[in-house]
Amino acid sequence: MSSSPREPDDLPPFVAFASRHSAVIFFVLMLAVASFEGVALFAAKRRDARSAAAAPVQAADAVYRNARVWTGDSAQPAAEALVLRDGRLLYVGSSDSAARYVGPNTVVLDLEGRRVVPGFIDAHWHLSTTSSADLNGAGSVTEIASRLAAWAVGRSRDAWIVGRGWTATDFPDRQPHRRHLDALYADRPVLLTDRDGHQVVVNSAALRAANITRATPDPDGGRIVRDADGSPTGVLQESAASLVRRLVPPPTRADVARRIDALSRDAAALGITMVQEMSGRVPRGDVFDALREAAAADTLRLRWYVSVPFNPEVADSVLRQYVSLTDSLRGPWLRFWVAKGMLDGTVDARTAAMLSPYAGTTDQGLPFMTDAALRRGVQRYDSAGLQVALHAIGDRAIRQALDAFEAARRTNGVRDTRHRIEHVEVPDPRDVPRFRTLGVVASTQALFATPDVTTLQNYAPLLGPERAARSNHFKQFDDAGVVQAFGSDHPVFPMHVMRGIHVAVNRTTVEGTPRGGWYPEGRIALDAALHHFTRDAAYAAFLDGQVGILRTGMLADFVVLDRDPFAMPTDSLFTVQVERTVVGGRTSYLRGATVGASPAGRPTRPR
Ligand SMILES: [Zn+2]
Image (tube, rainbow, N blue to C red; front, side, top):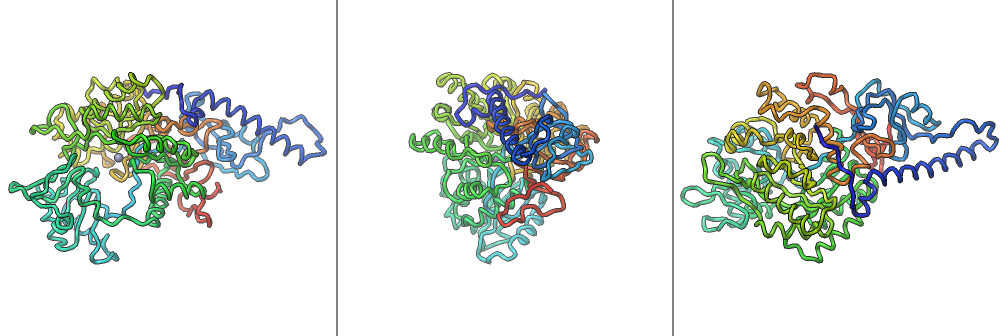
C-alpha cells in the first residue's frame, strides 16, 4: 500500500497554494473569473444573442479525447478525456462531456485508446555540466579505452580525458589502478569518475598535475587509496577526488545552456515533466543564471526544483539569502525550497556509513558529519523554514539523519517540513517506521535495485545476505505508509522512467535476470511505482495540488504511452515508450517529430 500525501498544515506562503483546501478555493475563484470572462466573450460575440438557455462553457485550447487515462487521483482514478486551457486542466472526464469545450480554435486530438498517465517527476536528478565519455556498462579496460578514444576525437590533444560510469568490475581483479590508464595516456591527464560519482581513478599525469604524492595526507572526508608501499593507486574517494577534479577546466556559460537544453530534450523523450536537481549548488554562477534566463524567456522544457548546499556551519547571512531566494524562485517552471547535504558515500566504494562492518572487513564506511554538527545544521535550516534533503545510504547515516530531524522537531515544533533522506538504501528495520512518524520522505531510486553484475558481485557481497535482502527494498517503505518519491540519480543511472518502473515491479534486469527477481519480496505493484514517480515525487517538492495527478484545476502535465503498461506482462514493462509528453499544456516531446524548433525555442502547442 502506498500512502497518500498528507494534508499540509503550516506552510510557507507560496506553498500554501499546495494545500488541497486552498487549491479548491483557488480553483473555484478561477472558475468564477474564467466563467465571467467566458460570459463576456460570449456576450460580445453574440450581441444579438438569440438564446440565453445554453450554459456557456469556456472553449479549450486543446482536447485530448478517447484515451485511457490513469489519473493517479483516488477521487476519480480513470478518465477518457483531458481538456486544457492556459496550461491547466479545465476538465477531466468523459469524451462526450469534453466535446462541450470544443470551440473554433480548439485543437482536438483523438488518442485512439492510448494510455495516458501524469507527467513523470524525477525526484533526484543531477545536471551534469561537463561533457564526458560514457563508460556505463563498459565491462573491461579495453572497452573503456575505445570509448575514451572515441570521445577524444576532435578535442585538443593536450586537453583532459574525462569519463564517467565505470565500476570496479570493469578492471582486472576489481582493482582500478592508474597503471591501466598510464598505458593509454602517458602525458595527457585522465580523470574517470565511477558510476556512483563517489570516487575517481586518475592516471599518473593527473596525479602530477595535482601534486599528489605518497607524502600527501588524506583530506577530511576523503581517502587517497594507496599501494602497499604507500604510493597512490590513482583511486581518489569522496573529497579526495576534488584534489584532481578542480583542475579540469569548467564548462563555459554557453556550454551549460546547451547542456540544459540537451538534457531537457532527453528527459522529455522519456516522459519527464519535472526534475528535482539535487546537486546542492551554490546559487550563483552559470547554472542558476542559465536556468533563470530560460525561465524568464519561457523556454524551459521541464519544471525544475533546485537545491542549495546544506552546510551546518553556514553563515546566518547566507542562510537569509537562501530564504529570500525562495521568494524569487517560486514560479511554476523554476522553484527552490531545499538544501541538500551529504552524510556518507556509497556501498560500492565502501564509504556508506554502516552500523556494523562491511562483510569480511572491519570497515564501517566514512561518515561525513558528526552527530552534533548535523543536529545543529538541521536545526538551523529547519528553523529558517527550508526543506533539508540528506544523502544517507548506510544504516548508520540514515539513523543519524532521522535523529537530527527528530531533534529539530523537538526544538522547532511540528510543521510540514517534508525533510527528505536521499537514496536511503540500507535502513535498519527499526528506523523504517520513523519516516512516517517524523513526516520524512524516502527519496529512493528505482534503478538502484537493478540486479546487474555490480550489484551481485560487489554490492551484495559487501553487505552480506542479511543487509542485501533489505537494500533498495521499496516495499518496506510502502508497507510502513511512508511517502516514497522515485528518482534516477541521473547521471549515476539513466533517467529512463519505464526501466525504473520495470525494476521496481520485477526486481530483475531488463534481460529478466535473475529469474523470479532479486529478493523478490521487495517488489511493488505497477500503480505504486507510478505513484512514486508522479504524485509522491510532487509531494516531495511541495507541488502536490499542482502536479502529480490529473485532476481539474491542476497543471496539464501528462504523458501518452505507446502501449498500456496495465495490459501487458510485467516482464516487458521496460519496452513501453513515450509517444508524447505535455508540460503545462505544451507538447515538449512528440515521437518522430522535432519539437521546439520555433525561434524562441519554445515547445510547440499540441498539434
Ligand atoms: Zn545524487
